[in-house]
Image 1 (cartoon, helix red, strand yellow):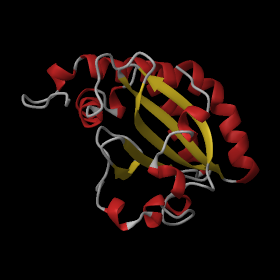
Image 2 (spheres, rainbow, N blue to C red):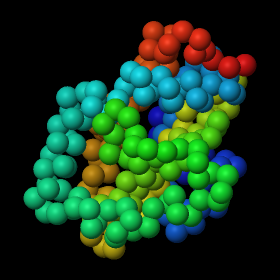
Image 3 (cartoon, one colour):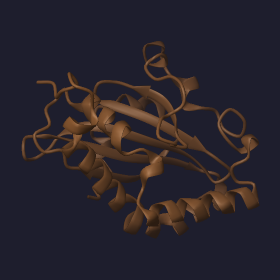
Length: 204
């Protein structure tokens, strides 16, 4: 479900101090019935175990295949347009206590690179010729008394071209990509007992 930007900006996340030059593009919520305050690591583990990037539905896979093909043809995704070349990685801004909380490439074929991961929030990033994007996942007490997953997409478009690109892909995000993520990630929570090794259980 789409949420107002304030549902992200009003939370006491560590990310805010690191991203004053980024814009909040989208905020989305995912239902996790029965979730408690300590279940964020369980949710992340279930998402990685059962719902990798490569397991998206056909419509989402098609959209991304088209996007990667265009990127290859137009040079959007060349190394010189990415992290550490065109833009500085957010990891370079991290205070010492966050630097070692996430390491190595993400799993499941995701194009995002981990930045940091705490017991209630997680950040991954992606950069190319169009935009520098951050995906922030947070764990929030919902109105029904359970905790739920929130995703915020933060962006720094690359000039007018980047802003035009974000405007053009907005309908695809709202009509196809985010609804598919909702089904996928909510299913991962429901199926966590099947996806995760024995002994991995919700925390009180």
